[in-house]
Length: 320
Length: 317
Image 1: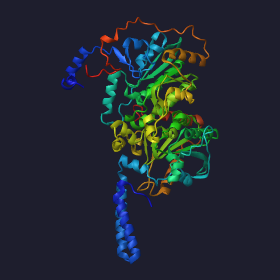
Image 2: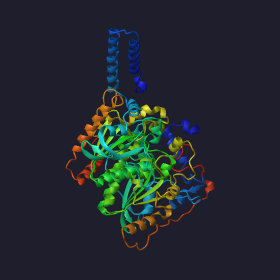
Image 3: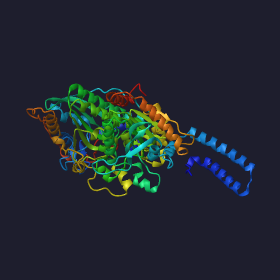
Image 4: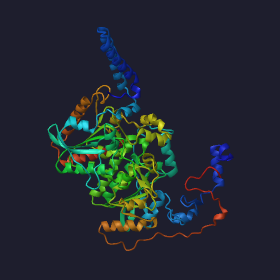
């Protein structure tokens, strides 16, 4: 049972009617009539879903990107990585469960996978701190990237975070430095880094894992320098204006592809990844495989330089 | 606001203001509230003689006190895309930008200069908090990248004085992309075997700390500077607790191992010279030439207005 978003209400109502009719059918054995009506409503619901998702506003995309049923790190790993072997800890302070990582086999080759994990129910969300990492998380990520570099394993990152955790301990232990080092490590390694924005890409906490040779974004994911609520409360002096902020900041995959910040947008199934996680996961897998293939046979120096030049060109006159 | 500013038209108002309020002769220390004469505070590099508070200053005030004999040249910076998102909140971004440009006579938040520091070439970039909160966008990042390339070209150390609230939201995702881009700038300098000294000044937060500001080979701060990733208000709202005294201040960061040293503004120049010399394995420069001390006559405080504030002259005469 998926939970419906506010703007999906008309679709939810149709689905509810179908549900009611089915139940009625079970009780009364209405037969063909009901079947026909169900089919009719179903096709209406499908069409409405297609239309709604074909023209989502930036703010609606933010809501889809945050959908609780949207596939998470562990779903992608389960669907794409064989023999996944998690590796824990930053070797300095703790193991931050908001960022998970490990080695495994992706379509036949060994890779390092690192990503934010938000959790899927109250208990796991608390355990993973809702995907908001502390310095330990970024230090673990940097450690795992170095490890991958040493063994020539490509790095795949799955980014899905509101942002780095704003807390006293996180600040004391150097949140900013940890993020900066993680970004620096992304830029330093001599193996391909394929970054995938699968849900929310929030600020420095996202870019610390997303500074990749290829940046892939799911169709309904969002990526921004600050959350729309945060931006609205600073520039409009009211978090209520988050919709306006989402519009103004250009947070959607489609906008970011135009700005050449994102290299590839992966289509989601109709109604978003949360309605059919398996298909979204496979589609992302295909995109990753394609991106990795671009670097087959390339030496480390090329891979590193490629990433550096790509970012240096970003936002320059004549590029956008 | 008073009757004058309410009823007199802006143009006339400006005339009136100019006549009645000459200059801000007196500056009020934002920390202790004492009035300090502008000549005096300038001579003291904008450090309050009463409470030692380090006031926020920009490139214009910093460069002359850093380079040998106050001699330096600023670098022309490459043009960047202006307002790529056509961003507008309560104001248009281009208007905010123009406002800051007029206020500071700067192109964007960072100014780059080169000159001699202890007898050897150095490239120094200074971020101005008065320019849209020092925010890091395309313009500021291009300044850092240019500074880094110049340092490599001149085989000189790079010193960046950071001061910013964070990334420039009005440039959306492109401002976030300046984190990796400025990180690359730092890498260019470090790979060339040159020192990169980061000086974090009040305030340095957000995306700026999460990139070049925290990547210095040596990290220095000025006393009392606010430094952090998340701003104190965001943290208080998240944890719903009051923050401890001195939290996110330079001394607190030093205590927690995030900085090498906290250096008084008056000792900054000598410290930078010494660090750069030692890292470069150079002999000490014959003498650290101290800056000429201008004659100073401070008029008595009583005969002038006392309500003056730093920076912008208020509309009320």
